[in-house]
Length: 286
Image (cartoon, rainbow, N blue to C red; front, side, top):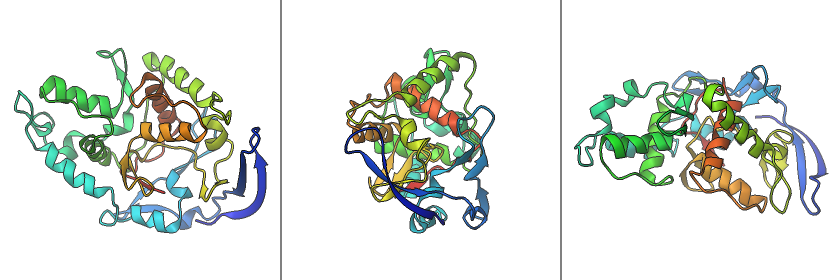
């Protein structure tokens, strides 16, 4: 990906918080399309009506060519080790009911096609949005009578990656109306709230400064269409909530808990900001 560099230093309104900037330009978009198995995965679309952004870019567009290449080949994508684990778990009977995921949903490529593109989504039973994580655990505890997996457990990350894979290439389509509306508003409030010792919000980086450099990396728009993602920094898969928590720690704010209502609301709102971008799960990021 080509970036036209214009080096500056920009204060972020907090003493000592400076960012070297470079302007992100999509002039060579045709040379930087993401193809996996000869299928194009849309990483660059006009923003839908009502979006605070003019254009939507996947985080893939901001990565180095070496990192981008890892995602273009499933054999080279390190996230696929987890896919192999999840395929085994899908057919494994567990719990008092002696059921597996396949018992209800048949083959994963049939039963889960398009599912993850709509999450988070409203649950009348919970009285709040289901994330893919909470939905998987509801199946485990209610239908299989098996033990729930922890949010960042290898099994959960693998299963949500496998389910997400079945929507790869499909547009994110998270609903924001009806009972989801109040949760979207809550998530939006969190997104724009300045917090922590650095007095920063999500928007300061991912809306106002995407394409600019922070430390040795380009800031993205913070799109989550590839989660759970394999981060080279983590050496494994991680959820959106892990990433949110890391961002809050970076600005020296007290982070909400993984699985908290605050992070669920934030996940719903951030996911909706990427409506129309293609699902990339499992994506590879720095």
